[in-house]
Image (cartoon, rainbow, N blue to C red):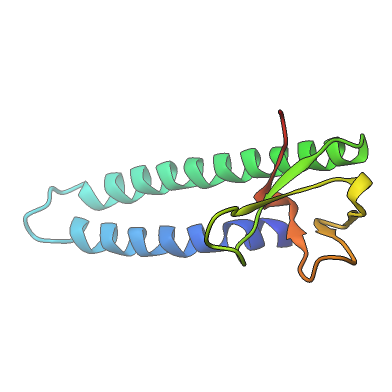
Length: 123
């Protein structure tokens, strides 16, 4: 559950704001009798489906990246430190990288890379 809140926290906050806007709009006098019930129900369902799908896709990709790394394949990760030119880094076991929980770490690199921000590198 902690992983869910860590990965989807920003989207949950955004969904809460969207629900507040929906609540405000559906309670206006010009809206129909059942607008609140239908609007909140529909918006909640759509947001829950979108957040759930994003979580499922992200955790599936994380598992795929971890398995590929253990097999010795190369992984490409987003580097948020470098914003010009090469914005990604390729890592593998051969280059001295290790998997520490959900993070790739190396003695030669100052910061770890979260597996959710990585992909299997296919040439």
